[in-house]
Image 1 (cartoon, one colour):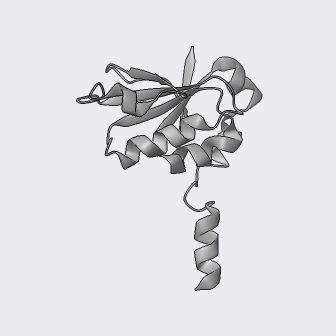
Image 2 (cartoon, rainbow, N blue to C red):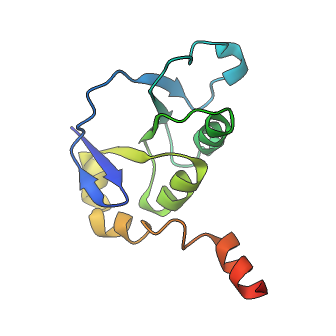
Length: 126
């Protein structure tokens, strides 16, 4: 079973639409117009040490994708703020990861805009 992590904590997967699944190493240029009309994209993370999915999310947003963007797989609570800043709306984890990193771990990073080092730098300059 999958658990969805949002800024509000853990939730069941209530999305009823169709996902376009992408691997973190996909070449977006090679996809051409396959993403046209897509409302939801899920990016797979095979390991927490592979940051290509974050770059992929940022590129999708920069290309104008405005639909639901979900990270799926091995994303840790410590990476939640980075996932949100990269453009992900939510993270999908399995029960085992949720047991090792309970909701409190994720909620501690839910203020992803306030914990951004760039925001702290801007405040210190002002």
